[in-house]
Amino acid sequence: MTWATSQGWKHLLLLGFGFVMIYPLIWMFVKSLTPSATLDAALSFDGLTFENYIEGWTSLTVPFGRFMANSMLVAVLCIVGNLASCTLAAYAFARLQFRLRGPLFGLMLATIMLPFHVTIVPQYILFHTLGWINTYVPLVLPKFLAVESFFVFLMVQFIRGIPRTLDDAAALDGCGPFRTFFRVILPLCIPAIGVTTVFTFIWTWNDFFTPLLYLSKPDLYTVPVGLSTFQDSTGLSNYGALFAMSILSLVPVFIVFLFAQRALTRGIATTGIK
Image 1 (tube, rainbow, N blue to C red):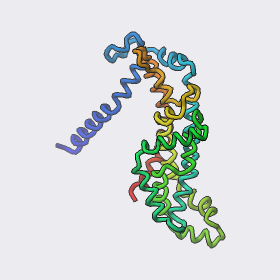
Image 2 (cartoon, rainbow, N blue to C red; image 1 turned 180 degrees about the vertical axis):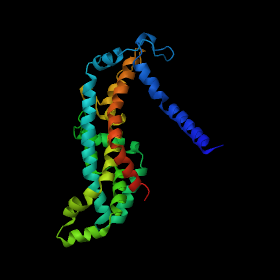
Image 3 (cartoon, rainbow, N blue to C red; image 1 turned 90 degrees about the horizontal axis):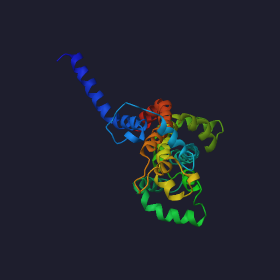
Image 4 (spheres, one colour; image 1 turned 90 degrees about the vertical axis):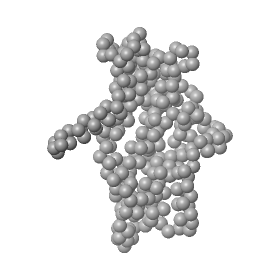
């Protein structure tokens, strides 16, 4: 077998795997353009129409655009919270000397293994007592408190790779810890910040459980909870509109991944292998 033939088989195999991976998305996209009357039929490209998109956007009591705006607001606030809190916490663990730094860092790492469901009940009781149910505070506030241990660990690993001589040079110029962080460390953490931004956006945008737990007013719903309103237990679910709005809900994630792909790859390459 020649080199060209070997490469051809490899490419053919990769194309086959790629098609298997992307087929569910193709199926849902075609079904989103299929009239509701023929939705149960086999996959076909005949009679495609945008009526499901129009119906899905306007058929609910709250326009689907409101869900998109709500999700975008929550995602942006969560990104700001994660970047502000996780970078500061990581800088403290990576550079500053203080008592119990090692045990606290180990405790922080241990929380990565703590199942999210363990904290649901006490968190709900706390937020309910504070009167924050049906607000975005329970969704956003934890991000400003560096509760995302994975991102803190990611930042710590990246900051540890930055030469300490830069800190020493900044100290000789009269910089304290905060000025060193903002003037020296933070600008060098762009790859890790890019990874944190992309993953925070995707995880927040796709999060279904947390908004479902704390939000019960339809005008506050985010996209995943809004999509669930197209289904009911009476057999009257509007699957055509559901498929159409599901495709639309993927557009922001696709755009973010498309424009941040280089930063994401660079960030993972410079932090994940250490």
